[in-house]
Amino acid sequence: MAETTQPPTSEAGPSIAAEGSKKEPVVVICIGMAGSGKTTFMQRLNSHLHSKNTPPYILNLDPAVSHMPYSANIDIRDTVDYKEVMKQYNLGPNGGILTALNLFTTKFDQVLGYVEKRAEDVDYILVDTPGQIEIFTWSASGAIITDAIASSLPTVVAYVVDTPRTTAPATFMSNMLYACSILYKTRLPFIIVFNKIDVQSHDFALDWMKDFESYQAALNDSGKNEYGESNYMNSLMSSMCLVLEEFYNNLRAVGVSAMTGEGMKDFFKAVEEARKEYESDYKPELERLASERAAKTEADKKSQLERLMKDMNVNDSTNSTSSESSRRRNGKGTGGKGDNPFGPYPINEREDRYYDEEEAEETDEEEQDAIRRQQEEEEEASHAPELGALDVDEPEIGGMPRSGPNGSRSEAWPKPI
Ligand SMILES: Nc1nc2c(ncn2[C@@H]2O[C@H](COP(=O)(O)OP(=O)(O)OP(=O)(O)O)[C@@H](O)[C@H]2O)c(=O)[nH]1
Image 1 (cartoon, helix red, strand yellow):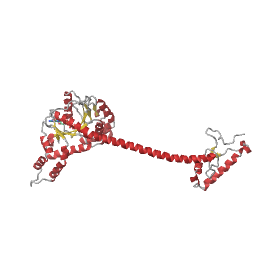
Image 2: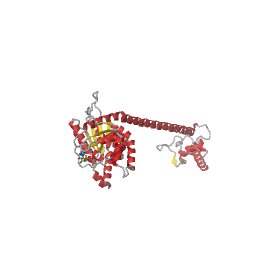
Image 3: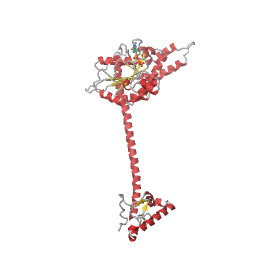
């Protein structure tokens, strides 16, 4: 376990890189059960950072918080009134908070824009989340917000635990399982913040996390039946404890008191370590995913282009077939059965089909009769000069007078004498 309870050698100060360029700020997302002391902890972080002359940038994502002891730079309550949402959508309090968060998420790209603009000026960005933990950790909007922030800036999760209420082995186990599920979901560097250590030291928790046997002993003390046997829940919990060993090994745990300010240095040291973990583990993974996505998009584009090219080739051959037809129609054919008997006139689709050699064979009797009739009319019309053009009605093809585009007569139509 990456424990940070020893007195720190140095506190994470302003994030200035060795070469003089400013580091990106770290985003600390505070998550915790209702009443664990998130808001008080946020206030403590805020006042600590102010005392170090590095005021943080604060985002409040809890639409239902009634009193905030600090002012947030971006506050969800300025955008959405969750009580109004409850009324309009006929929802209960949790539904109202969730819908308010969903509505806010639709504008989160703008929020991120503001945050990124201020990233130059601050070292820490603090995010307070709704007290109803599952609304943030298990909703789509919570995941969208977390992913959006984490893909833009180094991000760590601070999971606030109410230490005095976690002293029972069963409560401890359920709290740790919850923390594990959040870690699993966000996959972000994680700090467990045992809060309220002014009331209850967190040493027991560190002990249980480090030493499986001490947790086992606590379980044995707490949960034996009247015959001195372990009950089902105890066996389950001791198995769980073994499962969580790996989780504990890769975890930072610090004890703080949001009330008195104890443990703040440890906390910021843990944040600095978590930032390194973000840079070494999370960021490369993020970049790998981004490059995979880019490669996939590129491959999709390429295959679409290839398909298009293929389609165009097909069209080309179709075109060549039709140009062949048109060549024939223009009287330059081979004199075979595909030659256009109507001469070099623009002809409609149906005729076009007819003069396609392959399709011509499929043309039915009726159609051929119709075409024959047209051909006869055509021939009759071609003798018009002899008869006197004015005496001959202009023949029509497909119901359309055979004239040029602007009503002009076709060139081939005998000119009036
Ligand atoms: N003794 C002690 N009390 C604390 C500490 N931190 C918070 N509290 C108290 O715990 C209670 C809950 O604190 P909040 O900060 O409102 O907790 P929260 O997690 O924000 O609660 P929700 O807004 O419901 O999510 C308050 O009465 C705080 O005064 C602490 O470090 N020590």
